Amino acid sequence: MPVPPAASVTHIAIVGAGRVGSAISRGLARAGITVDGPLGRRAGTGGAGLVLLAVPDREIASAARLVPEGTLVGHCSASTPLDVLEPRERFLLHPLVSVSSPDVSLAGAYAAVAGNTTRALDTAEALARALGLRPIRVAEADRALYHASASLAANALVALLWDAEQMAVSAGLPREALAPLAAGALDAWQARGASAALTGPVARGDEETVARQRDAVASRHPELLELWDAITTRMRALAKRGGNP
Image (cartoon, rainbow, N blue to C red; front, top):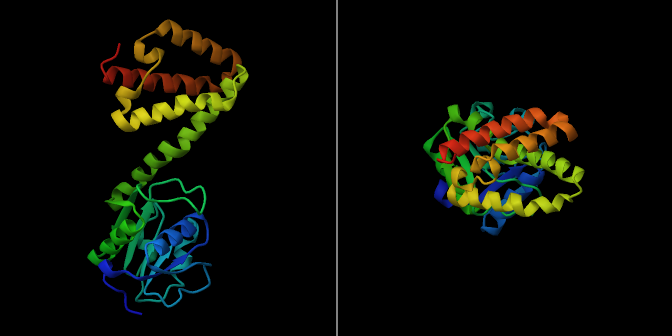
């Protein structure tokens, strides 16, 4: 089936029935686009001339081989090169949002897009806008770093909060006691940037308090001391950058 111009995308097949594929399928259907799927990897493409692969990275190449030639095909992987979809016309659509369930709304988030032709790139941007996403073009050479920044912002943040949770529990606090601090810091960072959002003893230059904190970590959670020192060093650099003591 011929692929329609990007501005008039009306029919797409989504391959991959996980959280991402399901969320994209639901979002595009709400936008009035006919969606086949989310389909299993070997279920075919429903006759659509436009296919989006929302499968694990390791399965993209094998899934692409099942897509008929002449089909415009894309994937949702942040860092997988587009050439795994060769020889087909190809594009990238990666929502920059944590998809924790199939019901997550993607609207308002950014999305990395790319394409090996003008039509492929235009199609990726059209699909992003249909989902309420804000498309941003990310060059192939920059996508691994783009993905690393996303992992740091989401996954590393969760891991760091896990460590903060362990310290809090050891001091008799429930995990949820830290939530307003974390949420407030994230809101301030989003509104004003990192330098303005930094608070606490490092931001004030109160090294006596920082030393007491370090001693407590060394005594109660020595396995976290290396992380504590590294994070404190980064906080000092941020404080200096922001003109704090």
